[in-house]
Length: 177
Image (cartoon, rainbow, N blue to C red; front, side, top):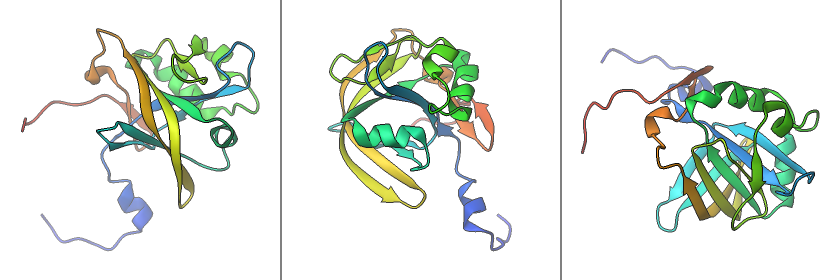
């Protein structure tokens, strides 16, 4: 490796490898209820047992108010075929449009939560909130996975990643442990 130069920490953090991209749905899972779906790249697993996941949401987002209001949410893992819907849900605000209708996303009330889950996604994780953590310009909403559904043909290699303005897929395996 060559010499390292001092750089802006914000730019250095962009050197992280690609982030998973998910669709977070929150609100009333019943038809016509208050709800929203948002593209989120700040998503992370915080515990394996019990399974605890978290999503980072900016307080300026419409979804933030819904995350504050409702006790649960879903994390939906889209496949590459949903890249246009994922892009739309990340660019438009639920204050202005009904993203479910605009994208033709089928949703239903969760099995163990009231928030919606997205039928088109290959994995649906139903989350009951357990805590929130303020961290800079985002607030992390953490919760336990209380129910999960996955297509039998779900493939990690089809899951979308996001890095530096580009949607990507998982690359080649270079070594197993």
